[in-house]
Image (cartoon, rainbow over all chains, first blue to last red; front, side, top):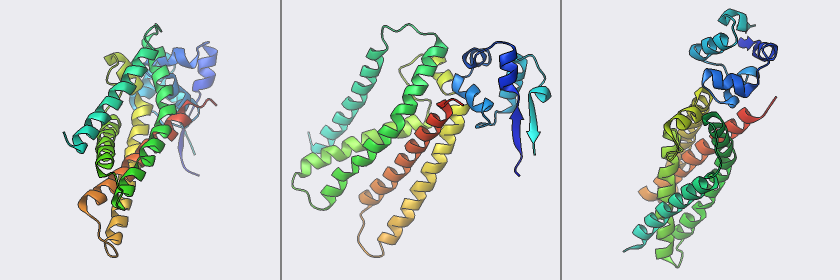
Length: 68
Length: 177
């Protein structure tokens, strides 16, 4: 099975009561990008991953992990 | 003024008209930068596949002239309009697009996911262009193909494939879970 970058973006966003659009605005991307990262359609760059982790008040390792 | 110049001007006028209509439709809609980027991004996702179809359907003009159409001047005008449309689409693929929007909107509408989709679309465009070049090369073994015809075929397939792929990826990205 190929490796993929999984995340708990959706759960954490819900915990903080944020919408996709609000999170997108915090990190400076469109809602579409947040949507594709959440749904594992798009693998974010390290820069975006760090920005998302900061916005969601978690470390990158807590937010993202490699699924094998 | 010859038919080619008329076609070029007509193509430019069409591009400006489309841009003007798009701008006019959003004139009284106060939107934040994020909302505007979202709106434009969705509109682009809807428009790209349609543009690719229109672009490809234009090729009928070119091939009808190749087979000896009667109204040569009119056909030449259509072909030069095609050239303008090709250049505009190529420029849109290579840049952020939405040239008449504010810089912050343009930056946001070309965010990381869009750039990835655009790069993937360019890859498809390159592969289709090379594939059609191989096709044209094989065709020259059986028939005469002029430089203009070869360029037209290669550009059309390359650009249409890239635009279509970009549209598909953008639509998929907008789809909610």
